Each structure stands twice: as structure tokens, then as C-alpha cells.
Amino acid sequence: MKPTRIVWMSRHPPVQSQLDELQWRWPGYVLVADGRTFDGADDIAARFKAAEGDEMVIVAPWAVVRELVNRDIPLLYAEMKRVPCDSPDAEVKMQRRNGTTTCFKFTTFKRVDGVDIKLSNLPKPKENYNAEIKEVDTGTSRQVQGNHGRQAP
Picture 1 (cartoon, one colour):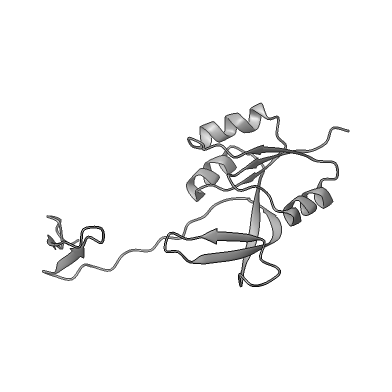
Picture 2 (picture 1 turned 135 degrees about the vertical axis):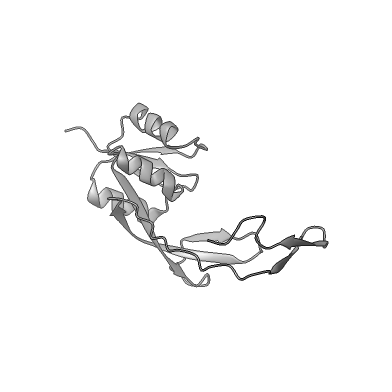
């Protein structure tokens, strides 16, 4: 029997616990790692097909994931749990732009069956307000008209 080909579509390499779970779920699997930047769902779908993949672990914007699900590409989501960085469970450390570090532990893979986004209406804008926008990089500020020429509904 042909081994399961798992395409790892992420610039982040898998951690050992992820590899262990893949081996447990798909003994003898073949991992095809693709950490290149992608141009959207068409590009990812073409790479998956070229790799002759059976499953795909993906880290991508939810809109892209939704397009891939709609194309019936079998997707896996690596569920991660936030943990203290000084914990021995910390497997992934992310440096944030603000200089802080956030750490995670892999918990399991989940099948992506769909992507639903719940939306709600915004409240009516207040009448005649002015918003001050401060430009962080330059330290300057300017006044911006609140409704930008739009009429309240």
C-alpha cells in the first residue's frame, strides 16, 4: 500500500510532537514540506496536486483556507495551546513585533470541514464627531472628518 503523502504548507517547520502524531495517525507517511510564500488558493491547490498529496497541513489566512475546503482538499489544522514561555511544554516561541514572546504547545490535529465567520451590524455612528488620528511613526496628528462624506443609514 502506498504511504500517505502529507503536504506541510507552512513557513514554520513541524515540531517533534506534530511529527509523532502524524506517524501515529498515518504510519509510514511521507512528509512533503513546502515553506515557500504562496499567491493564494490557486497556487496552493496546484502545489498540492503536483506533490500528489493526500492530506495538507496548512497555515494560511482563513479566506484562503475556505477556498481550499470548497475545492475538497483535505486540510488539517494544527491546534496549539498557549503556554508560559518558561514551561517545559513550550514548543513554539513567537517573537512579536512589540518585542514580547508568546509560546505554544501542540495539542492535536483537527480536520478542517469548513470556515464560518459570524458577522454583526455595526452601531449607528454618532452625529458630528471628529476623530483625531495620531501617526505613530512621525508623531504628527491631523483631524479627520468622522463620516468621510457618507450619510448615516
